[in-house]
Length: 255
Ligand code: OAD
Image (cartoon, rainbow, N blue to C red; front, side, top):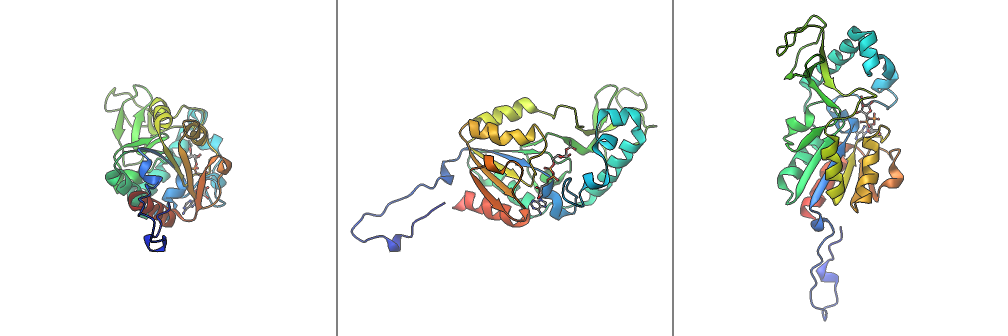
């Protein structure tokens, strides 16, 4: 954003008011990933000491893995639920909640993260496209309930009273992410798309930048390093989320 310094303008010209490009935005869609929560103490997936360096996706994060070895899958998510229970939002989550609260237009946050940090920071217009670790889903009847403890095969669903089907309410590889129709509609209508803390390696989230761009939106990546989809973005700021996100939000709100 450029705000000209009036003192530098030739005195014979009338003062001009430049409407900043930022002020023209009305509808923002924000996509977030594991990098946003890294500074809250949660592991990312594809960094060198990330979750996928320690576990194979096909062993813990597919419907087939759950059918083959449900205890191993429940253990994996029990461990992640244990870590998610106590974490606190960092400055980046807080800045995004502030953006939603103070921006004159609409802000939709779509997160790939299953942790509860956006809502703990105060974000309300939020889609957890890959599900929520602090929620259980009954594989028998589809009932959902808030869930903070470990899940095990001997649990009985509070709604249908059947046992053995209580899973974490998360999307596994090979499954369709949640609320895709709403997300696609929001991308088609947005004029600013921010992608924050994601490597851009998992679809359909990795294709959102192309959809937003196709709809004419300004596209911005805020990430520690260039993502796989970097060439699709009109603008990029690289650095730690706790630093670059609050600064970017401040610019959006106050120029
Ligand atoms: P990744 O681990 O693939 O990418 C995290 C990105 O965050 C990387 O590009 C890092 O450089 C960046 N990063 C790390 N620390 C950061 C920091 N402090 N500030 C800013 N950026 C930082 O995680 P995701 O892109 O979220 O899906 O992964 C997408 C999906 O793949 C996940 O939702 C999960 C996973 O497999 C499922 O399990 C279905």
